[in-house]
Length: 354
Image 1 (tube, one colour):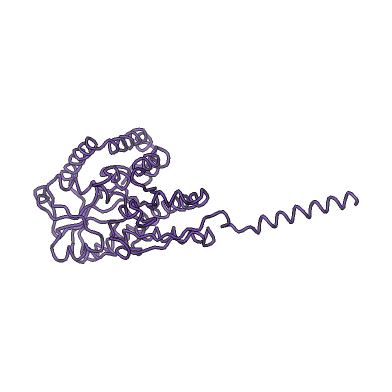
Image 2 (cartoon, rainbow, N blue to C red):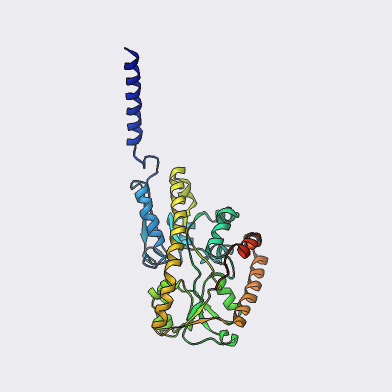
């Protein structure tokens, strides 16, 4: 065999090897995953409920069909607010929800869902990915057999819908109001009678006067739930939730049963979902506020006096919660330290808001 024949054979062999590598299915290293994923929010709710279906679709495409997460609407498999319990107890492999509904069992959970007068979405993401937040999240949930994955965040929520105008702090005392997490504790501190109901029950509760007011989500989501038809006073800003974060909860045993490639694909797709959710949320709210005004809704900014009262009550509640739970204290102190370190950049790096 001549040297040219040797070279030709070698090149041919490399080409064959390359074609075999290229022909290898992209999904070959992924485990087969078939998990039901019940959600706390309806899948049609913009940026809040439609994020997890997007994640499921992307995972199915990227894995060549090996990762198939089946979405279930609220109440179809488990109660809308029951994701944490069901995943923790191993009744289901995974679920999607706002983090904080389980505040009674996991006090620090609410700090990952929304912190009153806390960080905005981009700042929260910075703390989570680069300020120790992710590690603290796993520390908080490890004892509960849950592996939570940050999988969506949205713009500030509105403060709430009210059937009548709120002009003084005295009107908050005895006010029948729906709120969740730390925000609910602060409303209680100011004398409100707080109830936690899932989104699907709020319209009727407002319409029948069971509630005087409710907070729930973004203007686009609130519009989908029809609140503007039965409550004409819309209060902003959403001091109670400057950012609102959602998570894919995975049972720890189920998570540990899949290989690292599969885990990495799920985690990475959820990271992409954080970007998608905040972009969609931020893009759509301005026109919705304009629509509300055309529907006869009065947009009201809380007075400085009432905002100051919310802030004072927030400081009291946070101190009380930190004194009761060491993990709450640890997470909250981490967030405050990050905000303090970030403050010079926040002050000097951005144009003032007009």
